[in-house]
Length: 633
Image (cartoon, rainbow, N blue to C red; front, side):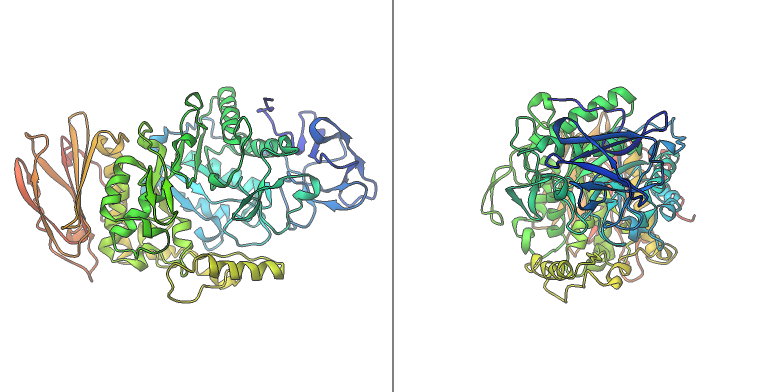
C-alpha cells in the first residue's frame, strides 16, 4: 500500500516555497488536460503522470487567480480539489495559499478524548449573520457553559447560500457565504486561544448533486453498490486509487492546514469498500503518520448505524481504528422513556429497560431481533471504553428529521427537558449538546436546502415528504426551498436573558460543572457503574464511582413523585445532595413543585423523587469544595 505525502496537499493548486504553483488534477481517462487562468485565451497544458494524475509547475498562477481545467480540449470545469468557489459551484475556482495564515495557537494541546464535552453547531443558523466571524463572538458563551469541543456541521462548498451542508460538491473548498478558508482558519485559531477543540463534520459517503462535475474527471462513483444517495463513492472498483487519495488528502488537509482537532465522518455505514484495506483503516494509518510527524493529536469520530465495534476497535485487533462513534440508540431509548411515540425507528425501543442497557452496554441491540430491521442486529462492544461513545438527547438529525423540526423544549415539559439533559450528562460517555438546547431554544431546526435546479428542487420536496411519512404525521412538511424555512431555524440569542430560558441555561452550566469536577462522573469507566430501573415506578437509579468517591443519580420519568427505598452502597458514609432539578431555583413558574428529597442521608432511607426530575447525591465529594456557577451572575 502506497503512503501519501502527509506534509503538504498535492491535489489542486498549491504553492511551493519558491512561490511557484504546483498543479495536480486526477483524470485517468482524459487524453489531454490544460488549465485556463483568469480567462486568458492561452491555456497551460499539463503532463500526464502516474495513476491518472496530470501535473504542471508554473509561475503563471498566483494566489487569488481564478482558473478552470479544460479536458480533452473541449469543456471547462472547476477544480475537483478547489479550495474556493467565490462565484458558486458552476464558476471558476480560485487559487488559495493556506500557508499564508498566521497561526498563533502553538501552545494549544488537544485535550484527551474523555475530556470532550461537544457542542454541535450549524454555522448558518448559529447567528443572525451566519458567518464564521459572527460565530467567533459566541465563544465566550460556550466557554462559560463548559464546552470543551465544538462540532461544526459540514462546510464544504454547496450550491446555494443555505443548506445543512451534506450536499457539498467541493470537498476541499470552504463555503464562501460562511467566510471561506481564511474565515475558518481565524475561527479555529480563536477557538484554540479560548481552550476549545474543533471537530469538523465531513461527508465521505456521497457527494452532493448540484454543481457536481466529478464524473467528468474520472470514476469517483461506482454503480457496484447503491446508497441512499445513489451510486456509492468508488473506494474499491476500477481506478479507485485516485478516489481514495482524494478522500484521504482531504482529511489530512483539514487536520494539518486548518488545525482541525478531530473529524466526524458522516454515515460511514454507507461507505462501501471490499478491498484488502478498508478506506477507514487506511485513513487511520495516514492520520497516525501525520500525528507522529507534527506532534499534534487528532481524533476520528464516526456516525455508524451498524452496532459493530470493528469500526472503533484498534487496527491491531482487526478493527478500523476509529476513536469514537455516535450512539443513536441511547437517544432513542431516552426519547421513548420520556413518552415519545413508538413509531418509525422508535418502535424498536422499550424506554427505561433499553436506556439501562445503553448505559451498560452502549449498544442496545447487540444480537437481538429488531422488529424494525426484521433481522438479528448488532454485536457486543464489551471491551470498548466509555470515551468511544458519544451520546445526546438532541442533534441535527434527530431534531431536523422531524416534520416540524421541533426541539425538546417544544415537545416536552420544562422539567422533562432538564431530566433528559441530566440523563446525558451523568452518563459514562462523551456528551454532545445541540446548539441552543442549553437555554431551551424554541425555534425549530428544520431541513433546508436552496437548490437552483428546478427538477432537484421538486425531488427534494417530494423526497422530504416521503422519507419521514412514518413519523410525526401532524402538520405539513415545511418547504426546504423556502428562505423562511432557513430563517425560522436560526437561534434566538436574546432568549438567554428571558425566563425560563435563563434558568435552563444556569441548570446546564451547573450540571456540566458537576460532571467536570466530580471524578466519579468525569472518569468514563462504564465498568465502575451500576444502573437499575423500576418499571412500575418509572425510576432509574444510576450509581457511579471512582476510588472512594461515589455519585448516585435518581431519575424519575413518571409524572408523579416516587418513593425509593435506598440501601447505601457503600454502607458507611454520608450522602450529600448536590443537585435537585425540582429545587425552586430550577423551576419555571408554570411547573413549580416542592421537593422532599433529603439534603443528607446515610444507611437505609426512603427518598421521595419529585415527578420528572433528577436528584444527584454524592459521597466523598464535599459540596462546599465545588466551584459551581454564580446563579446571580
